[in-house]
Image (cartoon, rainbow, N blue to C red):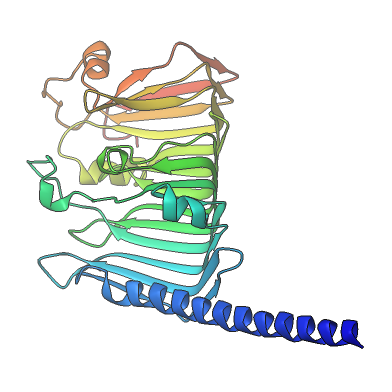
Length: 340
């Protein structure tokens, strides 16, 4: 009887502790959810707006998930929207509480972003690109993420002057490992350091100016190697119509490269200038057609030689070797009114 009474007391104490722990955990979870929602709603600058339909927080696993996110950024000095990011879901997994509380570090196991759709306007060129103290980001804690995954994203860049398409890329998938940033990195030109990168995108379009455009079927980056499929650079007009838009000689271009690849791509910043280095490049099965209407006035503007043009690139570029195979080049001219 005595042992039975002790067992009942232990069971009641254990049950009571279990109930208290459950209530405490529920309170902490509700507080965490409220804190995150409060930060999203009140801590963003006035020119930024973030809306979402649902947020789930699990304190035990250190995870949080937002669904149907709509993030908008306006120009600071106007009501014009410059960036809009819509995300199907954003999930944070494995927040390290010990690191957060005692090591001044935000550590996550993974950050998963599904179906992000980014639409942004390109900034106009500025004469002064120096960064002032007012627009620097003050990062109070170091951030480390073991893995970032982006699935099924779309990117659209528009020209600010006329809303025309500057670039578009569909079906973007990204995986980055061992991502870290801190107070000094976050304000540099490359704001993060990372271990490995995998990237895929399809149906790339880029406007190269008033006369040419770039199209790519697929881009893939894997462990520093890049493969580009179905690369096309082509004049926007036919040979005849291009002459109607020109005031002086200019080449009509039709370039198709089924496959371009470069090994061991690396990049960084030296003295505020971007450098890019690669291994061997390969171009397979390229066809290039060039046509020039010689009836148009000569272009008398001074042109840079290739060596000068390479020296004055905005980046430092190192490509030791490019191999071109099974390719074809054709050049033709219009020299009298009867030909077209």
